[in-house]
Image (tube, rainbow, N blue to C red):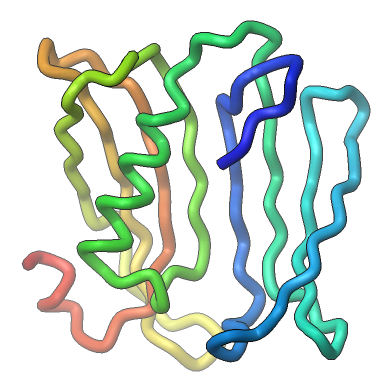
Length: 150
């Protein structure tokens, strides 16, 4: 997650429309929205197919704790595998300033979408004092509901 010069990322929403081939070169194009603090980046593969779209909202101040959302994304990728990720949305709620974060996950729902089994999960990052520093919501393709609890 990269921040623009005028602020730090406080919210991002990543939607994957298809999995690119391993080693595929992706091209990103940025489209500003209404202000310099909001933008959408679209990623296309070599054939021009839209692979992913990333919405980013930034705060006008620099200390928001984007590392908390990155920690949640890393936690979820290690737990469920990055190849199964279909959507990820994160919000910073407090500054974490390099603190050791505790990440937890709750399964919200499992269902069928586009001919595959998926699960919606909620993720929470807390600092050592228990303050919530970030929240995220993700959708993953799953092979077996039992793997969600592990």
